[in-house]
Image 1 (cartoon, rainbow, N blue to C red):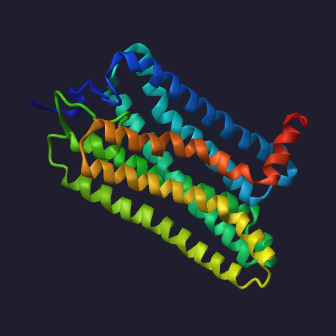
Image 2: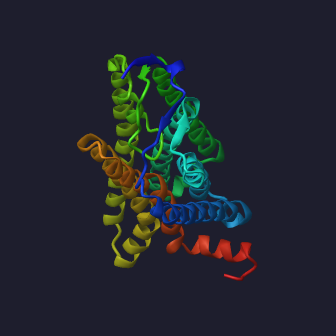
Length: 309
């Protein structure tokens, strides 16, 4: 393979799932259905949070932001995959690949930070209920979300600019359903040492810090729950944060699965399967987890649809 600079690479083939043409309609229908369910349910969470005054609280403000990010997160990867299946093409342009990688990195970072902010919100609500409204003011909530956006945008921009400095071979294939940062860097023919250092330093800093914040928040929540004398009181308090804990576990466990599958194997099928769990299944399940046992959300949705559900 002849190395060439990044301006000489016009497109990358995305290997994705099976190349069997008989399976393409089934894959298209399955992913289109999952995508529509993801968009619909997350959109309903946003509309319910906006329309119902009872949900004008910090928790649902953060939840509606998470739902918006999940819609964008899934759209970044699945839309191109569906278009490629429909047009019977596996190609993505170099510019399209860089854009997809930028937005994927952006929305992963936002998911990560928002989950940490939501854990902090639950910690304040459960451990300091009398000071909750004083601490979690609208100004602080807005500032926290703004900081999540600023850090995520700058990180995604840095990683994308670092990739643009690389040279790529003329014939390369991405063993994935989308342009993921690590996979693209591995395709470079030039030295990627600096990219690897920046990528793994950012991974440690931008994942470890929010995860540490989440673990700290839930350790304090558990301590507060154990201090409650009645079993009914413990159950009631725990149920308010059980959905958050489920979403956190789902996000980080599937993220870890993607990382381990990429490191352990170069199989496009294995990488793609792990990525589907991360980019499609997790955003699709989040609104179900939050609304399944949440009476406030159910009531808001019934009001939104005029009592028809």
